[in-house]
Length: 273
Picture 1 (spheres, rainbow, N blue to C red):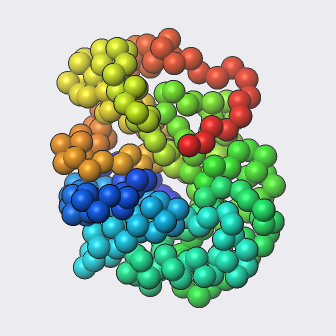
Picture 2: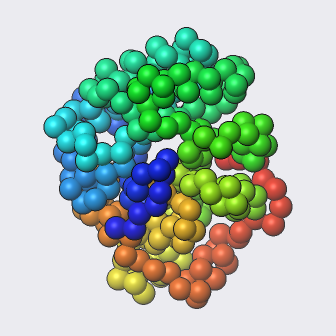
């Protein structure tokens, strides 16, 4: 699988998201099994957050990586309302307990809130000094937010990115490329399934003996600085996600995508879900 350097570590460019995991007790074992299968397939970057099922997703991840912690690059996120000096410390310690680990590889501010960025960064740095996190970053930050942050230590910015939400191509994606900051794309295959039923994606998928989801992932990964973190519980979908690494879109494919989903020609507000 293609890899990229993230926070000084080589990680796969396709990882695993966990949004909505931990919400249904009846799905618990299937979700744990899916994460483990994903690790076996090489998708060893796992992204979660204290927000997801109010810690439930972290518990799922913790169970899935038990005995396999050294194989996984673990990402979690702190709520903005916990982003104060003391709040970050307490939130991180709760996440560590749920995840069953001593260290989170990458800890993100989920989005901006009421606390000054300087206070949150200071709290992150304290966690790093304590060895409770190895690196830190942000999520749902636009260019002006990153410029205000002005922190070379910020390892990544995680944002919504897929063919239906490509406004970041106008300024944010180039900004991060210029500053050598990998961009982590959440919901890379969209939400609700509409993107996966799109005729253009299906046509391109047929050409490559692929699926529309694989086309969407390959489209995001055409930018060398992007990491995609799709969520999957179905084992066939997991295998498709991992194999999307092998799909290479050509100029004709990209032109068809542009015709169906126009690239931005002006600054757009950052989209979030």
